[in-house]
Image (cartoon, rainbow, N blue to C red; front, side, top):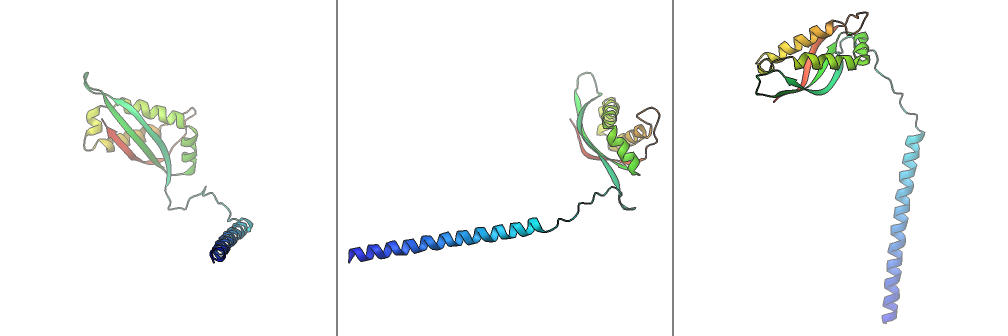
Length: 160
């Protein structure tokens, strides 16, 4: 009797093992079938939005940077900031993107010349934004290009 129970158990385990393997194979086949259908389906064309809608704003991102601010002789103040420039046309966006090293250099010079009191004043960000906008209205290159920057938006602004 012990031999028949052992044989019966082995058969049961063998049956379970075969069923698990068949389920795994079926799941693999289903996965591969769906994966092939997705690969065979024509991909939707990627359309770059080079010309925004008339009402869509155009933004240029200025990566974060840190500058020393002017202060009294005993303090060392830093400004950490990141900007977005809202421009009026694609030509200005392309110009700023192409000349980003000059833009960043001029921004660093302008902001490092600012006093810490201005940066921490209640209206300080607005004054700095106006100074940046005025700086960008004048061309960065020769011959001068007319740039159309409508807004300077701070996405990060920390004075320490």
